[in-house]
Amino acid sequence: MADTKYGNGNGNENGALFNTSKRIVIKIGSSLLVDPGSGVKNQWLDSLIEDIASLNRNGAQILLVSSGAIALGRNMLDLPRRPLKLDESQAAAAVGQIELGRAWSAALSKQNLVPGQILLTLNDTEGQAGRRSYLNARDTIERLLAFGTVPVINENDTVATSEIRYGDNDRLAARVATMLGADLLVLLSDIDGLYTAPPDDNSTADFIETVEQITPQIEAMAGSAGSELSRGGMVTKIEAGKIATRAGTSMIIASGKRDHPIAAIQNGERCTLFAARPVKAGARKAWIAGQLETSGSIAVDEGAAGALIRGKSLLPAGVVGVSGSFSRGDAVAIRDVRGAVLGQGLIAYNSEEAELIKGAHSDDLADLLGYAGRRALVHRDDMALLDSSVKLDNKLED
Ligand code: GLU
Image 1 (tube, rainbow, N blue to C red):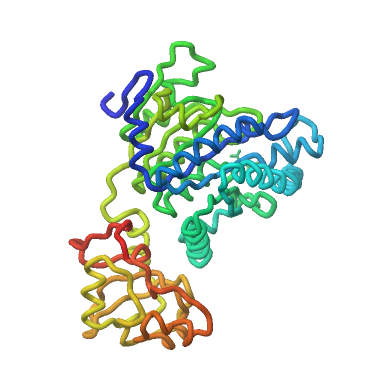
Image 2: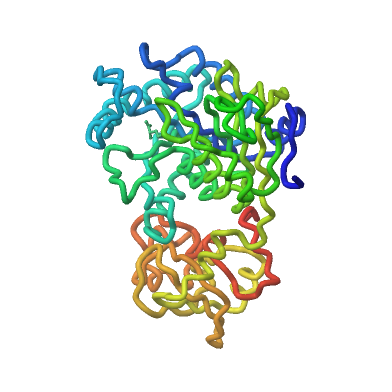
């Protein structure tokens, strides 16, 4: 099987991945963090945060996706050990999320790290469904990272109904990783990686250390393993792997059952690596480019057109015309002075505001708008240009 590599440890290769990753999302499963009898496993949490602090000192930005709200809430409310009804688990999440936030805050502060809590629903990360909340969620998390904080993210379980919920944090973590252009996603759970068959049912199952591509064969290996506390078994982890690797984020599935779980991976403890797929224009760019319906258009001068082609964001200074009626987050066409379409993007201002600030220098935006708005009218990450030779690397500097 060319797409997989069997064995017991990629050791230094995985360690190196942590050194080269500038942005890392770590997902922590409920069963690692919560003891069904006594609540938060504080010693384990402290050891994880020591690892995170060390990554942070090495210059990586860390985002945490933490499960555990429902597990903690059910402990605190002393709920029976049977599957909970939706409203019961939502009530448990309401109780447990406060405790979860408190535990993260207390543990992170020991390493002088400040958490910022984000509770997301599906709409906030699926561009198609809610572009405005997508932009807001992403901008807020970007700002938290720029402030040097550690975002601690969970699903907003208390309000999410079945149609608008992820249901498991594996998928949520993958969405967060791709939304923020993370280099690496680490799923810490009670299983150390992918086996050729669910290992509990099959003692001859082989461990897989690298997956170059998620094929139907790989999907078939997932079975449906899950434990009492966590919703996601291997199936949701493979789903997460698809989301992440297609968008250029590598993913590791590793056991978090020991103290210092991240340092252990760095030191060669076995885990499964799903290698990032090479992305040319990025999945997000493809989606933006595929938005057939634009709500308006922005005409830009020659200087701005050149800057866009060099991979820069569209600043108000380069705008010579605004037409149509649109809201923040809508898709707009970007045209040159002759009216030729250069591409399209998601706009950060509504049409009235865009009209107000067109041609203005970035320093004057606050005066014109009456509030400190965003520097770019269309951020380069939110833009897809028609010329396919243009480099659409969303990690270019402004
Ligand atoms: N959001 C849920 C919680 O915090 C966890 C979902 C999952 O287990 O993946 O309890």
